[in-house]
Length: 119
Image (cartoon, rainbow, N blue to C red; front, side, top):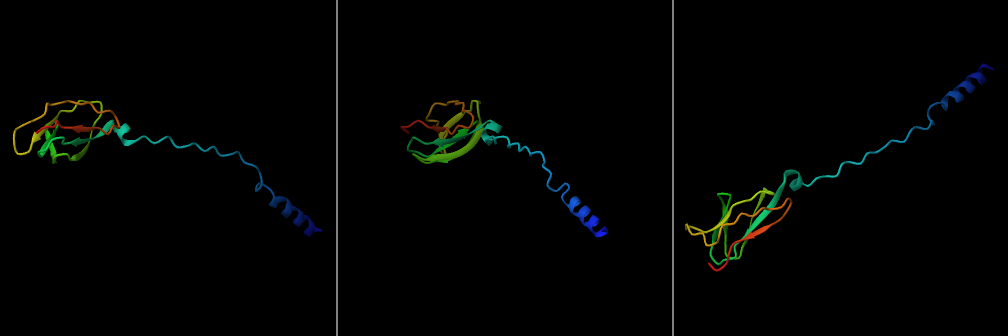
C-alpha cells in the first residue's frame, strides 16, 4: 500500500508546473536604421572637368586634387545644407578659367559639380 501511495504522489507531482501555460513574449522590433548621411547631415560630392586642360579642384580653400580633361572624380563627403566655395584652377598656374560658385548640397545627395568648358 505504501508503494501505491508513493507512486500516486510521484505521478501527481511530476505533472506540476511543467505544462502550465505562460504569457506570450512580446517582441519589440528594432528601430529603423538611419543612413549615416542623414545622421551626420552630409552629402557625397564629386567633381568633373568639362575642359581640355588638367585642373586643380579647390573646395573651401583647399586643393582636393587634379582632374584631366573630361575626368570625373575626387569624391568627398561634405556638410549638407551649407554653401561650399568651389573653384577650378588650371594646374601649375594661378588661372581660374571658371566663375566661382557656392553650391549648397542636399542631405544624402550625390552632386557632381562640373567646371566650365572651353579652356
